[in-house]
Amino acid sequence: MKLIFCDLNKHMIRSWEKWFSEDLTISIHHGSIFDEDCDAIVSPANSFGFMDGGLDLQISKFFGWHVQERLQDIIKKKHHGELLVGLAEIIETDHKKIPYVISSPTMRVPMILKESVNVYLATKAVLILGKYGTFSDGSVINKKVSKIAIPGMGTGVGRLPYEICALQMKRAVDDYFYENYEFPKSWYEAQKNHQLLYRTKTTDLQFES
Image (cartoon, rainbow, N blue to C red; front, top):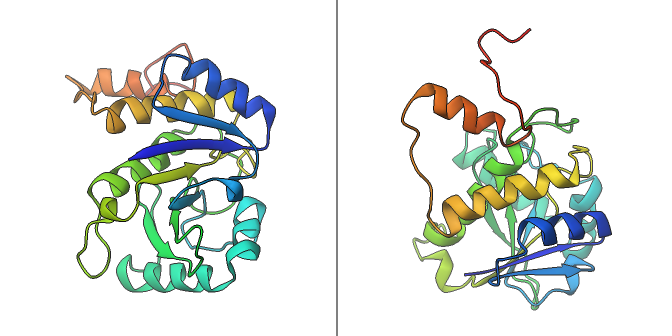
């Protein structure tokens, strides 16, 4: 599986280039995600599959509104009405060049992301689906999807700083693309690792005011 990080914003590109400077397997492109040579593009949507704002609106205009309809049908039937942050689904687009969209929510509803690890979880969901997921007929996704284009996650409506977005995507790639994830030895370590996804100084979240 090949990952392509693509965005129109130069600040997002620079942040990716900083965090992935030594990673030769991740492609970083400054431009439209719709111009990429890929099998699937990622929609950093919301948990209810509404694709009528931000990049999701551009996806709907490019492929057609049937993508939103198919996604919401899957959410209703398979996920009991809500695709949680940390899960992802794949939808056929009927487009010859880019046959699939992967929906991976970065937020439950449109909102500003503050001290959130949602981009880490959303990127993780894309990687797990791409590596181990199956289509509804049981066929393996990675047999048909070998190139996935991913935009800056949570930086639009979510207003997540580009640096934090790149950091969280880097951690997810290290943990689940390269499979370097280590289970925490204690709740304290888990809590510390959680905070280091969005800030440099840590504290005990149980007592922080």
